[in-house]
Length: 295
Image (cartoon, rainbow, N blue to C red; front, side, top):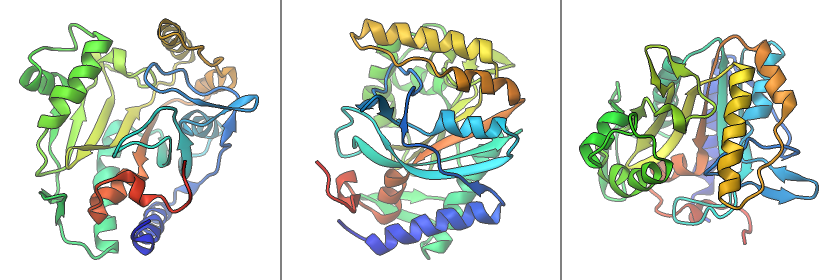
């Protein structure tokens, strides 16, 4: 356990940032009946339900009630997440803008981390594990298509092969992404963004981006899909992929599906709090940020 005071100050800074923007902090259930079916995320069973892998579905149900801007910091749980960047339990920061777009989230990410640098009295140029990172705005953007063509030699928009995509993302693309600046990896192929709406200018890609800092994925953002019929179709497709892995998919949350019809437009993002702390505090292993006993 290291730097507990700095961890607490980061959490305080996150709340101050969103409170200053008049976001409402919410708290949704940790134990739920039906997490989103996702091919690459395995939920942990608990009693008659599951521990949340993300508060996304429950937060969107709050948006459907007419609330505008909301955020939450909560523990989430994912089976078999092991490594220096992974833990089966970690903290997630999520925020949603009712009526917002992914472009609002680009600005939010930059402004949040700039705010935290000032809050922690850190400079705009930091070192993380020997890497020099310049946080000066604006941060560069790179499309998934361009990244894969440059580092993996193929275009996943034309050949959305799941196994090859995720293998090459981890093995070829991520290790070669520039680390001297924070980087937005944008325009994910539609197949790999089941909760995001399609880009109206190019329906091969979705309004999804991820933020990398020092080569570490920090955030995952969507221009949210708010079409209940399309979302149900995608969840059924994801459930079939889960069955092919030999797993039993969770039941589909019909309350969430029905709630989507009450949301005209929204954007949301998830940030791994420990990973953000790792970068800001120059910590190598996520296990060093656990402030309670772990398995």
